[in-house]
Image (cartoon, rainbow, N blue to C red; front, side):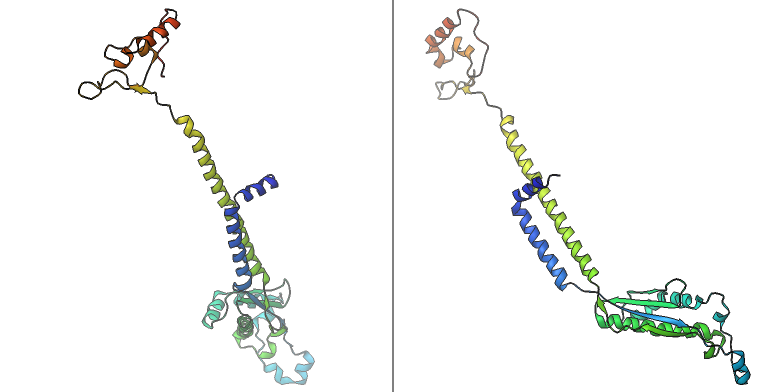
Length: 286
């Protein structure tokens, strides 16, 4: 497609293109300046291993032998299993329902880097305060779940994994990508609307041009007909050709009842002499 031809077409329909572009620009300005914004807060927690008493400590302090050591996650060969379980519980639907009841954002994610004891929590909302409150609520839920899944058999707290906040959700940052996506949608819609309006305008213009071109060709010139003079009653005779349809045959051999041509027989004689006595020319509208 030739860019110059496109520009010429757009300029030809400038009275349609300019209003559409103006509306698109105003919509884009409104979306960028006043549309709802999105803020995101993040927090990172580390799962810390319990400090299990050594043999020397047990010998020195025999009371430690009476503690309940039945933490099922201490028996797992995969030390990161506890982090996987906590992350799965946070991603459960019940977490979203609990946040909704508290009036917090349900737009959150819980991620865990592979083979690590880290859990990353993030939440997005239309306000900074709500995003930070959501992350803090998720952090509290993480600590509760971490305690609940380990103390199922009544294990002593000395044999439990604990959580450590690595990065606190002190502030929420604006996600410009959300505004940028909205802005792109508005601009694309404006471009599509512009070319659609131009296409419709070109179609209407072509239709009108075809109508103007076809009108003269479709009109057939009506033959002129002559009318007989009025009869004795002041009315037309009602027979024979009229003034709108006058042929050479009528002139050469006028009807007896034709007062006009009967009174002008020299005209017919002149035409006969020019025809050299041959048959008159075929009837032709005159």
